Image (cartoon, rainbow, N blue to C red; front, side, top):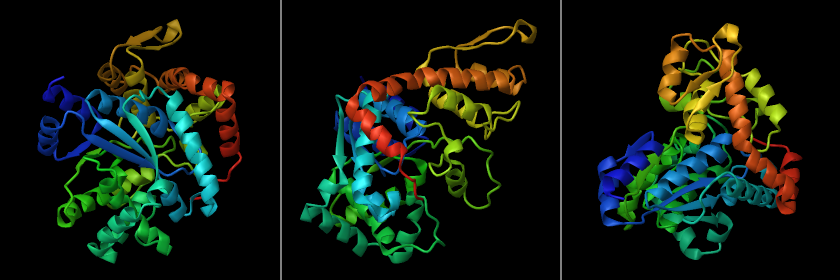
Length: 358
């Protein structure tokens, strides 16, 4: 695959690339650059982390990228997830890996790493200290949105260390590309600025879009990023997200009550599901409708759907029924894995019983 084709695949992943020219040069120089993403194990895993993450990782690896997933257990501990219980966090991390293995992620060029292994290495803490010594407290506080926090919150001291660790992770893993969500942008920019000062490099940022939650968006003032964070899926509000092991009935219930404004795809979470999940997983989509409402409708692309929905030719209820049906089809291999694999079943049962803490 030539460089432009590889670049085209990565563009499908990145809502923003900093910078595209640097990415082109990187792809020319390295047949197999290293990219990473990290996740806090903090409860059940939703479809943006499960299905969309698998789709994006597959595009990156198809473009020749070696992908490293960091199970950020110590980061979650620093951020007081799962009540600050490290053992519980690590069990949830094992559950995450089981989900990804069953969600269609192509694993030949994917490696799972644990932050709890990093912290045993003195050279890792040296990198964390290097980052801390080259950033002001105010700059670090501006990065706390990467943890789902706000700058004006009362922060624990551990949460100040967190951004320093995340920036150090990039250099410890020798990652050429940081492939995280748009909400992680500030710490990635910090790493780009600090890297050359520390004798490292300037990583390319490929930021993927964050899927909206299913509930109506809040009227939020502030930056576009603050708005995006307000809209993203929240594990602490179960009805705002579809989780990877939700039952078919639960998926249908959540989708039926989801926010879905008629005639517009803007700030419409089900339109986002169609674009970023359904049409990515299925080459064509059928909307099943009674004959008196026009009969079944087959769609070959998201653009076709967007046009018809914006013209009012597709009813929100028809959209909801289609999204629920195709989501359930996409989730069935994951459900089957957790029904038939004893280890996976035990992990899912453990996670289901836990209280998710913000």
